[in-house]
Length: 125
Image (tube, rainbow, N blue to C red; front, side, top):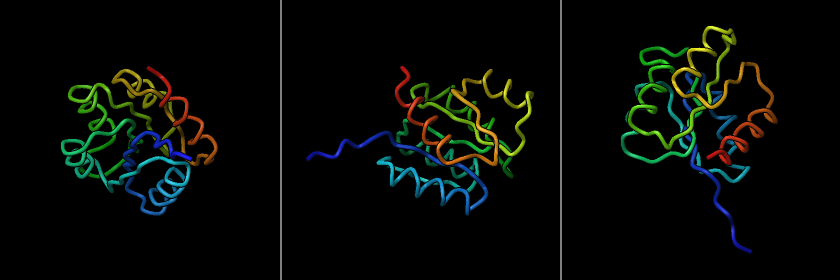
């Protein structure tokens, strides 16, 4: 039986428990996962490695998720972004969509929602 390696995912969230949980769930689902505690570290990783999907928390110290999203849109158009936020309001959703986010998930979120969104986005052209 061959293992079909799914997409490579970068999880960017300043909450270590959430980041670790998402990382574990996505790794168990067959994804290759890297993690970054903030947007600054995320940008360094994005410059070195190729990712299919970036899960970006919007509210982070230093460099926020929208700034990382703008970088991805400008320099890595093949990387698909999904925004994660505890601030699930229309303004952030509109701003994230405007800068190319594929989807927007509000915290607290269900693991099934994350998995189904990642599956769907990874299949999109």
